[in-house]
Image 1: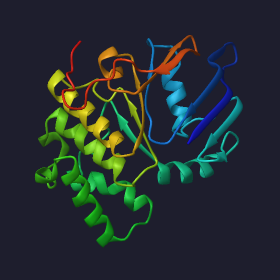
Image 2 (image 1 turned 90 degrees about the vertical axis):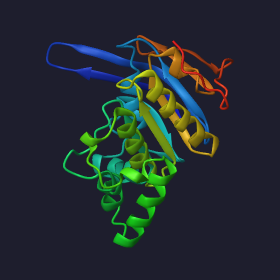
Image 3 (image 1 turned 60 degrees about the horizontal axis):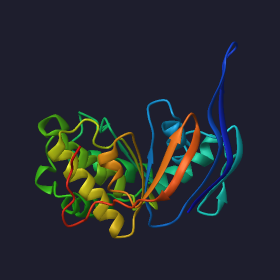
Length: 237
């Protein structure tokens, strides 16, 4: 699905040049659950932005679903992104003035999906994540865990090839965090590719593959030998 070769990302101002990513080589296959881990400032968020087509590398090759997108312009990136990638953010990023159902339907409107199909897909997805009974509620009427379920539903409603999760339990307590991680793991088991950025070892334990970063470089890329059981899925520190 994704192949990065010799990716570099350099940020420049008049006085300072900062290298955020150095010689990143990474392949992500369809159906994987990958955790990109490392301390704050290691480059993992920059890498996630590039994987999500929100940013472009300064140099190197980037193949997404077989297309070389490293030199795509913003319009091309936006078109590819909205049809293929679902995002789950730490801060939920729901629109307070819209109901749960309206929040989930928003990506479908950007894709010009008809009203009847939008309604059917939203209803099915809200049921899928167990939040259909809150469809007419506003985000502030929900718990943090419920809001993150809505965010997951919004990410999935476009039927994306890839879900990118950025610290998806960062604003949740341990119980709600476990529920969201179990949901992401279940979705992956059903075939959805998931790439998650985290500094948390407890979140990383849910992934099948760990990519560890430091100072803009990949230090380790290996299968996770301590994957959480889908039956038990404890969320422990």
